[in-house]
Image (cartoon, rainbow, N blue to C red; front, side, top):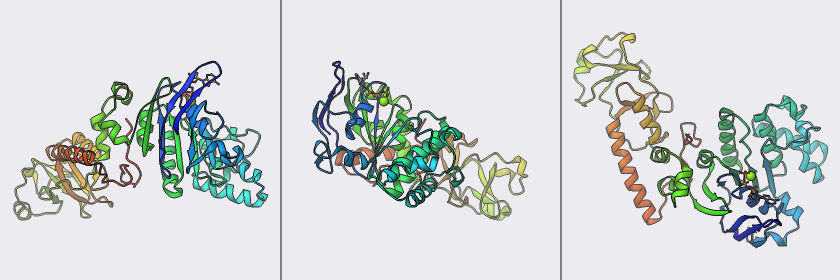
Amino acid sequence: MDSVTKRYPDGTVAVDRLSLEIPDRSITVLVGPSGCGKTTTLRMINRMVEPSEGTILVDGVDIQKQPVNTLRRSMGYVIQNAGLFQHRTIADNIATVPRLLGWSKQKARARAEELMERVGLDASLAKRYPYQLSGGQQQRVGVARALAADPPVLLMDEPFSAVDPVVRKGLQEELLRIQGELGKTIIFVTHDIDEAIRLGTKVAVMRTGGHLAQFAEPAELLSDPADAFVEDFLGEGRGIRRLSFFPSEGLDLLTDPVVAVDATAEQIAARGASGAPYLLVTDGDGKPLGWSEPGSLPGAAPEELLAYGRPFVAGQDSLRVALDCAVLSPTGWAVAVDGTGKVVGVVSQETIGEAIRGAHAAGRTAEATGRQDDSTGRPEDSTGRKADVAG
Ligand SMILES: Nc1ncnc2c1ncn2[C@@H]1O[C@H](COP(=O)(O)OP(=O)(O)OP(=O)(O)O)[C@@H](O)[C@H]1O
Ligand SMILES: [Mg+2]
């Protein structure tokens, strides 16, 4: 988008000289308060709204020079409450565009079935009508319908804002998975900054009057908000939230304070001095049982052990998760496990604090040199999906 302005006939300037370079095959989020021009911007991209000034290019081609139908077919569109055709079945809703494009009934139906599976809808829902689905299911149908003709671009306008937070989180994870599998270029509008940070590879923060306040990767927004408006819009806990972008890889994990439940007094005495006030007891499989004071070992009864709380997956979870585990632990130490739940070590709040300071320093260096260590720019949690950076 090159210096795009939209002035509505009544004189309202909804978008003001907006310039944005939206990267392909990733999710770009437009976020900002109500009325700041997000929907107008999105609708100019598929020419549902025509700009007053400026140009919009897709793959270098001015969209004004393309037939509007061709343009729209290359862009799926998803809106809040899904906007489904109420008198059509789920399968027919999803098959809408393929049918318009002249696909046979059979081929369109097969495509609908494939997409239902792709967005996590049970095949048994195909013959239902939209009112017979939950809000979250309807939203999935909306995504499937937008994907039906396999457009390279998806435009999404507050698609998940009408559902409760739990369903919403599921839909966000689903979208990240779909994007990872299909590599679509997604432009996603929301007024929820946490959703923006969670989904966006890049985030454009807009302010009332259709001005671009900042266009940056989520981690950079959190570390370097461009001005007081962006800072205020990001809300509290920026520092903690930014930790989601730092991996726990490289944390100095101690194994000396970890003992098997059947360890003998000699084995316990033979361990090195680690300075840990408690020892973590593990079962025969190496999974955590709980913390014990060294004096109570060997032979501590399970009910005497202190709860180990929630462990983090070393290397996969972020520093934010590791810190959370340490803060929640009754001993102040976090338990690190591998992907199978076996203990790989324990780590104190102090050590995590040092890692955080190191990561911040490294982050500053990377920013200064314009280098980027993480190719996706997106933190991952233990499931390989983007970590919970919301809230
Ligand atoms: N057809 C129209 N005629 C006149 N003004 C309009 C029209 N459509 C939108 N506007 C105005 O343009 C501005 C931007 O509207 P837009 O719908 O793009 O905002 P938004 O960021 O999507 O808001 P929301 O978060 O509430 O959906 C608002 O001030 C709105 O009142
Ligand atoms: Mg809107």
